[in-house]
Amino acid sequence: MIRSIIIEDEPIFQEILKKAIQQTKFDIQIEAICNSKRDAKKVIPKIAPDLVFLDVELADGKGIDLLNELEQVNFEIIFTTSHDKYAINAIKNNAADYLLKPINEKDLKVSLQKVIKRLEDKETINKATLLQNYLDKLKAEQQQDAKLMVPTKDGMIFLKVRDLVYLQSESNYTQFFLVNNRKVLVAKTLKYFEEKLLPYNFMRVHQSNLINLAHMKEIDHGDNLAIMTDGSKVEISKRKKKEFLDSLDNNKATIS
Image 1: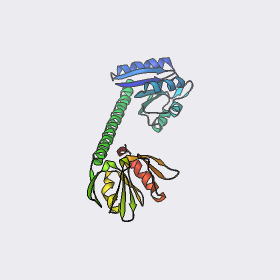
Image 2: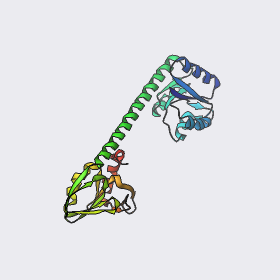
Image 3: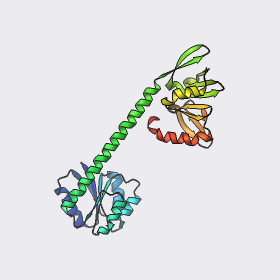
Image 4: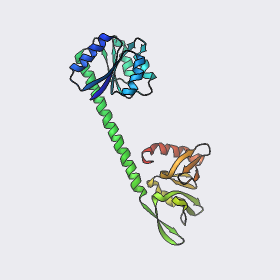
């Protein structure tokens, strides 16, 4: 079912459009009829319609102005007008279509078919996006369950990737900072571990620092610091900051 609102200030056209919609036999529910831009601004956020039939010229302003004044326009639009010169505005506002008054039933059906197709496409994209986000998050969680084998002065030990908060270079050694304030000093360079941990959602933010994004709480832009879940403040180099922020934008789905 498509939930719709009619925004029209002339009662006769309200009735004509309402009956024409019903006669198409499409599964469209008319949730409200608004007489003005002012009323529509109150009703639209409450109903959250899938489709709005919007008169171009209203008694208290233009329908296009209404769209600009709303916080969100996440519905399909069919403009209704007595003048086809407004068609260009419909295109500019990414409307599904526009209808000339008096409403022709055949034209209305064509417009509604366009709306149905656009809503179906939108739903497909939303489902695909949700699925991809879920798969990315699942992959990141599975990766964090992996273990890393590291050489220490006491021999080889295994560390859970999810327990690593960040790594810091100390000459030819690497200091591991883990949950519960544990530390492990390893006789390998940070570069060596960077290559192993990048696939597990780690990021090099400084020549000396490699952080686990799963443990990053926030970024202090003023001091260029990554604030970690254990309270640590890890320096982000100015040279790497843009690359770091760009990478975060590209990996939002895997950061939780």
